[in-house]
Image 1 (cartoon, rainbow over the protein chains, first blue to last red):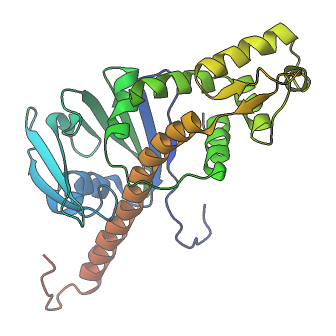
Image 2 (image 1 turned 60 degrees about the horizontal axis):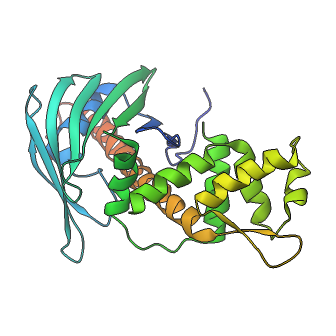
Length: 168
Length: 124
């Protein structure tokens, strides 16, 4: 596109297929991939964007070497904490990060997370692929934590059905 | 266990005909015959789909009235919706923030290019 666009919120696509143990998340951001890679691997930058705004991130470790550990703790306004940890299997600048992922609130259920960064001119397409040990693990991880008791209305149900129809 | 429900719910939702049936029931009760009408399905065909939805707790079928209407049960759908919603909220917000961080970095890079030679104040 050559026209000057006003900035809009990034549009994230989710592929969450029923009965499968993976989630694929795709988004294209308006920045070169070196920068995107940096935002993923520099602990100071990572802490500024990962997760909902209502949590403060503490990146306790991020060792980018193969076998290096990472751990992030999210702290809510009420002091509640959620820990996430794993091991970096491969960190290939600026194209790919492959690591294990475990939510400490649902221990023993380790997922494999791979983020790839594809250059699209001056933009970068991020494809995040998360594979769980089982379908139940996939469905259980989020169900077990990070809820904010948001009220769901019938519109949300209709919305879900729409998304499942269109979002494949 | 919630996770178990979710798997059954998602499996039931995996079929477009079943999603269309749910969408129809979101507007109110309907009989099996009414539900079969918009689809090219036999009554036994629809009944099979209804059975899957019933087993997943997504619908119930009344035993009282003669026409045995089906109705939507919101609870399980709500669970599934919450799950998807939670995951999406997490990443929608993350990528929104990542976008901000990146634009900020780009702006800083630009500024430091513009002011090359200027006495720059350290950003970090």
